[in-house]
Amino acid sequence: MKNNDIIHTDNINDQLKNIIKKYDQEKKLIITDHNCRKYCLPVIQEIIDDTFEIFEIKPGEDNKSLDTVKQLWSFLSEKKYTRESLIINLGGGMVSDLGGFAASTFKRGIPYINIPTTILAQVDASVGGKTGINFMSLKNEIGVFSEADHVLISEVFIKSLKKREFLSGFAEMLKHALIHNDEHYSELIEFITEYESNENLKKLNSLTKQSVKIKEHYIKNDLYDKGKRKILNFGHTFGHAFESHFNLNKNLEIKHGEAVAQGIICEIYLSHKKLNFESDKMNRISNDIKNIYKIIKPKSDEFDLIHNLMTHDKKNLNDVINCVLINNNNIPLFDQEITKDDITDALNYLNSV
Ligand SMILES: NC(=O)c1ccc[n+]([C@@H]2O[C@H](COP(=O)([O-])OP(=O)(O)OC[C@H]3O[C@@H](n4cnc5c(N)ncnc54)[C@H](O)[C@@H]3O)[C@@H](O)[C@H]2O)c1
Image 1 (cartoon, rainbow, N blue to C red):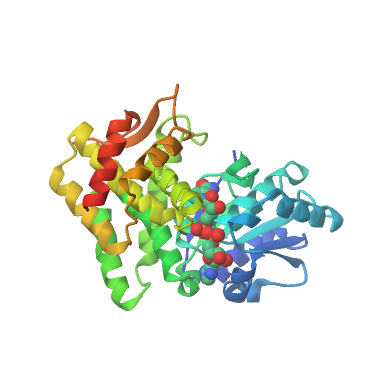
Image 2: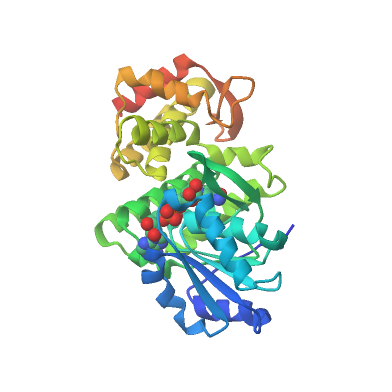
């Protein structure tokens, strides 16, 4: 396994210069999408010399595809990239998933750096070694576990991010705090309440740092998702079902983090119902989330569709729907079985919030 190096910095260029020194004479490719080329590439312009090339991909989840990877592999092959070359993924999770996959598979693996430019990528996608693409309409169907050699995280990129994207990534930060650290959760709520009025990003680096530390804690010794890494799926059993249901069945565009935020409300409710998670805390968290995100309330005639989507969840074992729930001592537990009645109760609770 690689020695994954995660650096939080407010001086991205100096850090980057330091890292790329050892690739001085080698070919270097920056993979980025159209928006990140416009908003993020200028930030690192001073490190770019004639040993660099840029590969621009179209933004959006639809382009996290085999077609894009084929174009990228062809480019690498035609331009004679070798295992001594370097790839830099500059962008959100779409770029790091796809770029990391292309880098890890070309000639059995080229070193690569992630420079995540969205909150979601900074605290989640760029860390932990899951790379991949969508295939035959299935999300992340093809991929490999392969950690970046370095991850460079800086709030400098976040200034140009749309607020809705910001909040979507922020849901993963809330999730990290809820499974691991109550104080950090309160800090996040304080930060976002102020951010709503002044969009001041000061403090963000220290918060993303804590968030990444939590993710690292759950990945340590479980890179391949067999045990405690599953806890990072808190909010996602319902979240994934909401994402598919509202985007596909209802044609309402809902972002991943928005769906996860709603999922957290449902899974906190089931934590209370099944494991005695404190009710005051459940209500407080639900209210916090309601104040940050617009909740899309599913109607009762949609409950069956949502249940059906949950029966296809990757985390299920022997046709039983599994979820992460938090017990009355604040300990998150994975592989917690939930029934169709539990799902109905949780959706009714979501509607009551
Ligand atoms: N590998 C993992 O562990 C993991 C974890 C979570 C999510 N993911 C994947 O991450 C992807 C979602 O990532 P995302 O939310 O970062 O979305 P994204 O990469 O699609 O970026 C969202 C939008 O923001 C734009 N953008 C990115 N950075 C910007 C910036 N600084 N300023 C202005 N615009 C900017 C992009 O061009 C895009 O239009 C999904 O494909 C998901 O499957 C992977």
